[in-house]
Image (cartoon, rainbow, N blue to C red; front, side, top):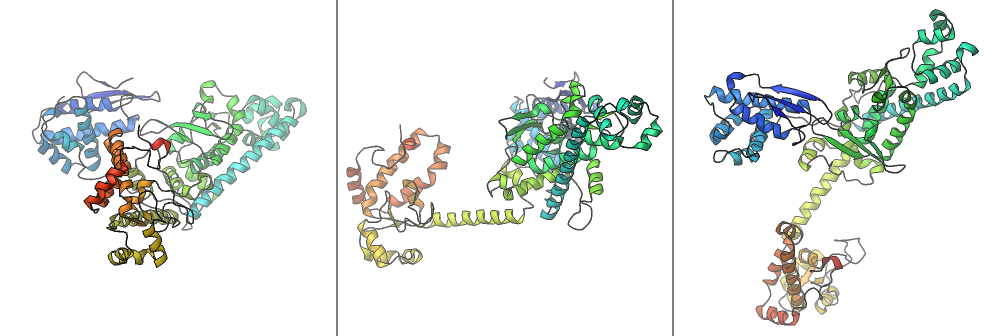
Length: 573
């Protein structure tokens, strides 16, 4: 259901994808319905289902920004609408406004213009430009490797121990009998609870025909209940470990439901969840996360079978505590995680108790996954829900040693590539060895060419399509020791390429190929794929004698792509 404005245009009602709704108001009638009303109308177009805002907290922040902007401009005497704002007024407000208000109102002004609102000259460009100030956010530092290992081991230990106890309790229930007939014993209590579901000690003792005090003295009830039904300590362990294995946002893990688990085979799960700041998202779980999820569903199956259908869909079912019959559906409160750390003595790097932050677990998962065997690559892929800038600002600002080494490798490779492309091409005006030795002494020195190699270059024994290659086994574009697999145009930017007059015909054929690709491809795509090579080709051909090019053009003819070593999918139509 789309967001609705009130009649006075100073409040907005929104319904979100999870079924919740909320109403927000500016609460400042003195501001009038001009600017505030226009901005709230723009906000309505940004809210689910028309826009990406799908949480009450996000909308509340935008309404606060509307209130801030309207009040600040009202103090300067402005009483008009968003369409009457001048560029100077906006710039003055954004320079003085806090970063969060500037960011929200910039997006609101852009949404106002996209919805057809008239704006003064230069306002649209200013709103679309770079913010004057950025929010003072500090990226979460990942947990240290020892801390991460300690947290993972503690969670895995709790999960494994509780699941062993659960399976032992189920086995004991099969051996037991009705305690009203067979008497009070641990297996008989398990037999009863497995059939009735969670029950209080009073209810169980009444069924067995014993006073509560006698039943309490005989014991065994608490162990039977906690073994059969997961409680908060177990759920916290499962929940933290799922975050370690999957990297799903904390609010997404909290609100998981069984209908969001899509099994694609026996070992693959697509987990759908709702991210509080945006909307529905999904992730393909790693093998450890899949196994953990399978185990949790088996662990909670007995409890899940005894609750109402509406509650059964919640993933994190648990009993409120030993000795109670109350079943809780949602994830435990966040403070339970710190209580869990205290009970299990999970230590930080400084020796104190580890402070649990669910979003920091996600940050560490993204930072550590390049070292994880199940990801299969050292490179940390950009999260599909993040832009590269967000990924870099929030997840790579505190890199691990492995990530720092990877970043340095990428930077060094990029710098080497820039230097290689900046080197001028080696173009010979004749085929003489003396010309190469005299005109390119630095090239000979850098490539380590001896007289035999130079002779082979001059005689055409080392020719590829576009040039003569100083070393096809160098491994520059493929495995070292194997023939170079580069495409014909890649040689144009290769430092090993030497262009002789005999290559002019093939270079002209390559220019014709570029021309046909330019006509068939969008300009942006062409420039991304062939742009640098086409520029270098023009530079190489400009160094040839015009007479050589004229003769080569006559010999090249108009055979199209037939004389170029192309793959079938690369040929022009």
